[in-house]
Length: 446
Image (tube, helix red, strand yellow):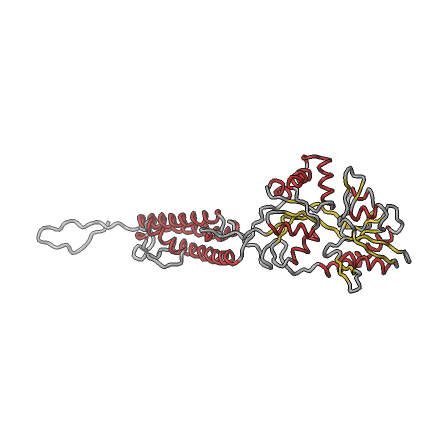
């Protein structure tokens, strides 16, 4: 290709191609695609000039499909040798032009204006735990109180343990419930348990409440300090089933793709349903940045290739944009050239070399900053706070269950011990009544 002159057509779109006017009235182009083009020109030895496509379109078929507009049309009708910009390689475009090896892979994403942060509401104090945890805590509180009441009642009735020291008679149902409640709200109260089974059970309950309250306090703090955003749309299926208007750039790759899928499959495919919905809304932006402007005005979801969306979201001054769901419809960007041009292979091989050497990744890092607004709309560097599930507390529930079983075993052991010692104890015989006028000076034993 050394010594060849190429006439290129381009379309301004940050950060791929950007145009700046010089003092002499000429224009200077810069951007991701321009850096790649300059590297190709240096390594392959060709020169070039660029002009902007008159209709400001990427390229799509018009009418019955025989006529093409945009940059693809400029190359197809030999008005340009190559098109420089983020042009997606697609089957319908490959019918009329040839594409170089893709210089960037991409998906398709959806962007919308960030919804208002979800408020806590009047029952916001319940948010740190989900419902299963709250019901489990309530069940544990009642269960421990009942177990404390039953074991104390049985031990007191059987006079098991140290009857002079233990206070089992004080643990009726009311006091048992009171003990479990004041333990969980960290307030002292009476009576305090004295018997060994009651202390085992109460000690495990105190450990349980310590872990639960500490975890609740930490998670509640996070809920109060981190605002959560709930995206109403997380997939293409959600978008189709919603009433939110959406659209893509007119006469660009996605426009042609959705229209072709609707003509081919009708409404039987999700792409066909999306096309019919977009034509009903009749909101097709004339450029990617126009799509972002429409999104910022209100309820609208803009569908576009992810590299552009990532760029504008991170650079948005107000940080009011967010990506919805995960990317879909993975494709690649390539440079269109005329069908059969013999320099296609040279350019493709050079692009492969640039990829293998990591040069294209370096150029991308120059134009796509890692810093900036978060893509998902959340506060930067803060993980989304979620309610803790029951699986988080299974361990401490097992400890409480084990202590309850141990308290029951100790109670049963004390009752059995009481019965055994009662059987072995000798019985005392009452003395016979002494004769009148005589004192009893001894006792008789059997």
